Length: 75
Image (cartoon, rainbow, N blue to C red):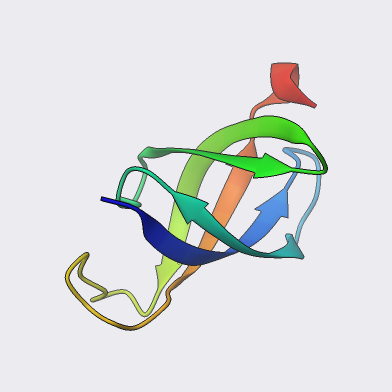
């Protein structure tokens, strides 16, 4: 199942993430889990550090905001 999310992406040395827009992801985002999505024509991966709202469920119609730290090797 595809899930639409709003992604805020930060690199490990940044304090705050940058909003990169809405993306479709194949796996439901999970706190401290992995996430993969396309950005600027390339696949990016990272670790989810926060989901807003925190009680979001995959069967919800709400589009969650996902805050993720980009994997260093995938820049």
